[in-house]
Image 1: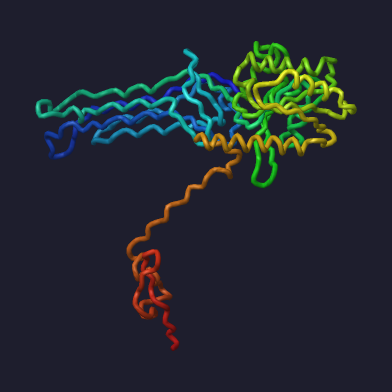
Image 2: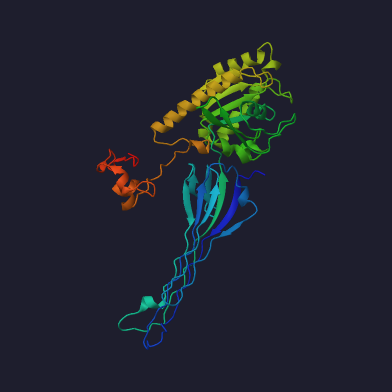
Length: 407
């Protein structure tokens, strides 16, 4: 089941209470206070993890509480610190305050993390209150409570390209033909109930993420149909691929369908309507004379847009125009990524293999292995080494050549 919006309450761990204790040892008549401090409560951390595609783990659990800190004990023993609770969310998750509605944090990059609730501090034991004037204090502190937050987690998919269009326009079919995604495909409207993401591999080194959202209808920006719930998944897409069916099943006009979708985008988010757009007429085999394509092109010429817009024709059933469409999308995506890098923005990683590998630090050798004796063993003794030890280019001591005992 796909979940892209959940309401959760987080509570960090309470700090442990301090201990009131006095030293009791044989032959020590005046031991003094020895109560230890309480441990700090555990914090709750949210981390964006590659491979996590839904908020399903939060759907059936509405309350998360981290571990408490341990109590202080006698003999100046401090309480144990609570173990940190780390929860993984998909990239593109927005953390919104449930009461006031402001965005607390937007996790967009792989590995980005955020401490949503900090654990409470542990209380001081009575040993902390010892002074020359008060040598037997009987005060202690209780642990502080951890932070509590009531939030809404909302997923906005990280995709390079967003597929939009009327129901049954061929979005899921196109996604299944050019990527490894296998969405549900049928000949009735609203087959897609939730967004589908697919990775399109153009070649060995180039790929992009394609998002297919449920079909939009008139009034989607006001909550009619399924589009209002899932339009957020194309907010981050730099390129929109608008699919138009030449002969809709309901007998509607393709141009009017295009205009209706553009108006819904405008009502939902003005910036979304200004994104670069590829208008694709699907099922081109149903328009053999090209009459519908000519009408669309004539409409675009009469009504120029403020953004880049091209018209193409494809057929997912016969593979007509698919290769050219994928190449054009990849060209635009690569250009946008270059602009992001120039602006100091890191493009989103697609696979775990794309993450940079942090080189491991070279382990420092102990002196007896780093010096001239480093090459000695049970088989190689000191008398087997000819010549004095020398320094290599790296500064390490290298013993001389091994002597053959038989000679």
